[in-house]
Length: 271
Image (cartoon, rainbow, N blue to C red; front, side):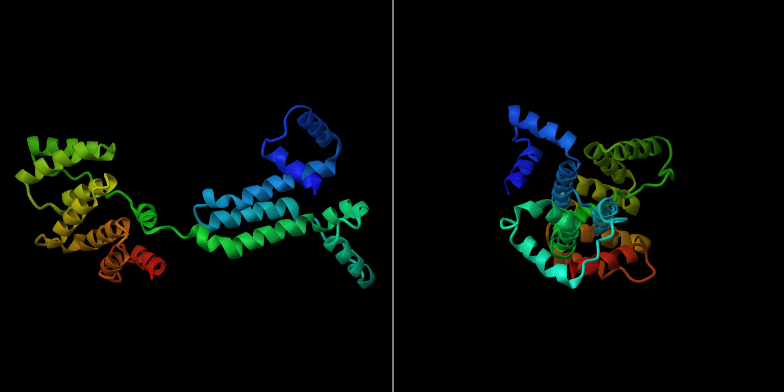
């Protein structure tokens, strides 16, 4: 137990002075101890993965790497039934058999790692990976991509290009001022309002974004843009933590339309 405490203090940076120097010198001489310290570091890394994990695939990749390091090509020794009882007693009562501590570590080091990984995967991962509704919205949001089609002649074309450049550079407030100026001269262009709504989403102006995307749906002859508008409406509601409203919008996207696959996957997460 004392060794475990010392290892934890070393990993946490709590050993100082002569205690630190002595422990580091021991690490250079004792290969088993060095392996045990590395083992503890990697278990700590595994248990802290909730701060970094992006997806279940990333977690599986980490566990796979740990398995390759500690388990692969390290077959467990076969023991006959006469030794199993003794070893079980040693493991359960290490303080009674201190001379067997190295044996205990050899028997269980890789089993402990496997157990920790399995517990993490099957007990903690579902909660760690479950994103909040606003986080889901941010994760699925992609800025609407304006194409290079010129939207007018002369000054109007230049105005559109300047707005589009600001939009692409992330200068969303400046872009929306110019987009709205453009709309005054050439109103109700669906792609312009999809861009305006997307910029408002990025600015966290969610109520304004809802109105912009709804405007696209209400425009005459804008049906081809409706699936995109429904998708963005759903993400706005999700960002506002209004999951039922988001589900309602997602269900409006029909099979064969743009964003149908994305909507179907997101619905599974929400229902």
